[in-house]
Length: 432
Ligand code: CA
Image (cartoon, rainbow, N blue to C red; front, side, top):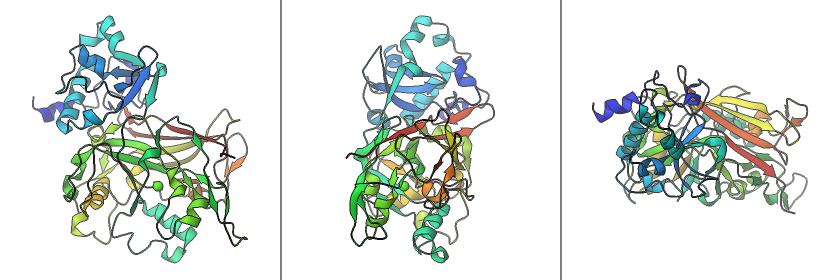
């Protein structure tokens, strides 16, 4: 069989695993998914690369040591980030995917029937700790949901001219802060900053009073471009290793005072949370759909043929510290995004800006067309005017101390799921 038909076989919806938990139609980590992450466990505290399958993790370093995984570089998985593996290139990612899919398939006896081998290479997710999977050289964040940009423009400027004239011509973005990207589960401290209260002439300094989420996805650069050499829109997806869920925590009051003229700074730099597993574009392939129609037609460097959106269901839950159950505060879908990841990357590099392996690129807040599908509390409560009712009583205009916010995302196949795992953060009180 050719490499391409082997890759196609990893997407076969009827393929099932001998890891039975992977076969449940709502488990994020089916044999069709095989996302990459970095983990450690009580048995071995060294951080190393793994692939999620059902409720388990395949230890890739152990698998390579056992001679069951062929990769061009020795011990490439025995690192505390995935960068060196990603740098091997797309053929290597695909080769590992194909080998794993085969080893984990129900009919393959190699691991299935060897208890000693299984115990050497499988770690229960419940017994593992997940870590930030990347060394992230740079982080940029786009603003590519038309619904989100329209809502924010209506609130902060003018409902009649909610979209600025450049918005339909280019994917708008700013350079974010890579140093404060944290993995799911890391507590997030409420930031202090300058707040401009409407009844006072000068700003005060204090804790953010309008702390918010932004429901986003991010993509990870798998092969970069040299300085001065843009990536063409048609080639852009080949440069992407995979996707994560991303919560771009935002301090709305700090943001509103500081953002003119150069954009957000302290309002966004205090933390960005990502989900620990990177879902490859190969795994997302069956969920490719058409992007929204773009009118006006973009300039030539932003054009691509075919379908470049992905059908990824998204939701956010909020659980107050005192509550036993979380409330779902929004449900939407990544497919609504106006600008595609390929267009974002083409635009990012068209000036000659280089990108590097591990760079993280945020989609921008993903808001759907209806009032219950918005991707931020700012929009869901319309800047606090319409507080949300929570399941166990109480309301929220913005996030309170002790609240736990969880993003979830998944592609639902026929009897299987390609999911991201949760992207969680709990808010701690501001420093006094
Ligand atoms: Ca954002």
